[in-house]
Length: 235
Image (cartoon, rainbow, N blue to C red; front, side, top):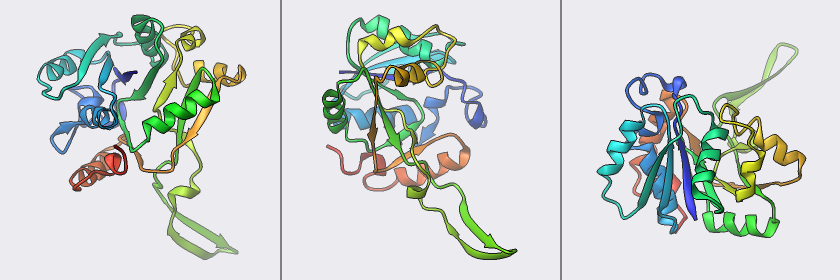
């Protein structure tokens, strides 16, 4: 299976790092987060990548030419203003009729990809989304009659489920994408839900986004572990 990585956005929420490079090229322990994402797939046997670029595509193109890992990497420049739905559409047209993985260029998780494929196949739907627990960003405070009754760290398990990326899409999903200006999340996914064609694979393990400098710094710390959390427990 090919792995489509959406790597064309502006990364405005972490603008300290993205004035001269796309967000997936922000370094985590001296390697782009894009490399860490690809490592999650490569460690589990998926080494064929199609990177959908846009903003500062040339930076990714130059980096790919210097990658020494035994990965098959193609780049498809999907345009500066194209939204996530449009980038997926262009990639699926390019690949013509293949089931694919799709993930974002800014999130890391130790998702069991073979289990995800098995789940998707068993469900028999056109698309599967990986649901994750968001990082607990804030502590919890409860009070009664003006008196604090509880104060402490909010647990990740208390935060509900969100879209963690790590999709599997069948070729027919392209028929649910209207045009290049529509985000996948607000256009195609609701249509798939309405058609009862979107399955949800729940991942209880590690997952962490890189939307802010604080999150980048957290990932830097984790990356220095003997086995970073996004590679722990997968093979």
